[in-house]
View 1 (tube, helix red, strand yellow):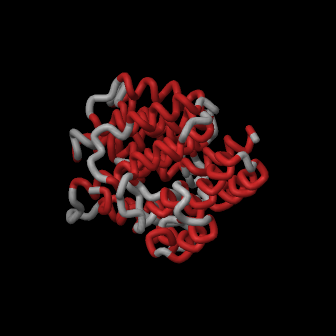
View 2 (tube, one colour; view 1 turned 60 degrees about the vertical axis):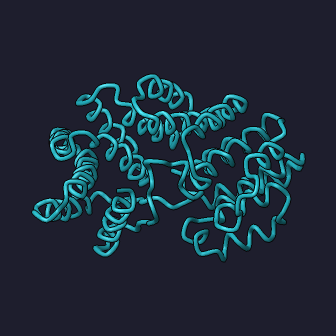
Length: 332
């Protein structure tokens, strides 16, 4: 389902781009397992001027009138329209779309909304995203996926304490391994961005549970490395133990190869620019952050500061890498 949602969100971004209403950055959106995404992927960011919003809504209305949409596709478009209606101050109509999502996908509608709203919030109207999520929580109080989505929006606003409280709530209400892993992953980021590195490392470690492939484990492993560096632990030794004999050729695995001392920083930067998967997912963003983390491990604060500033410049504001870089720069 995730690739289909990515195509729909990309199509929506293309829709507003072609109509001259906004510029939209597009790439894969795999929000159901955010820690398995490649680092630094660009979100869909439809930042629409006020005089263009009605025409965009008209386009969504036209799409939703089609009888050919699958239930999943319809739910995605309803989630986007619910957000757009909230931006226009039409909260009642927005609530109707959320209710319709519940009829279309009775068991997973909240997961769809949780996946789309933080990405759409990256366009700048985070208040509308939070209002939409509040409406959804009125229909399903305490749902962990919706609470996680709220936390993600607050993290975009750098309100990590608020996000931490919400993620604790999401963990308490989790009903499956998937939502528990996701809540732990984002709570690890909240702890990291608050400078609570030991707790962050514990959460990133906990979110490894149930991940059976190296690709699924790599994201948490790299973030745990960063947390352990800042907690002044043997980050490299534990990473080497976890990596073992895994193939480190496919992006973003070269980041791990660099952190283990088997690739110079310059070679990692070249890979981040020339590797097809890295280019597709803004690999330069992740490369800068982890070069900065390696500099901190070595005690080179000047180099770390340069790389973290570069991370901020390269990474979108919905990216965990951007949040971490901004938080670290305040502490250097």
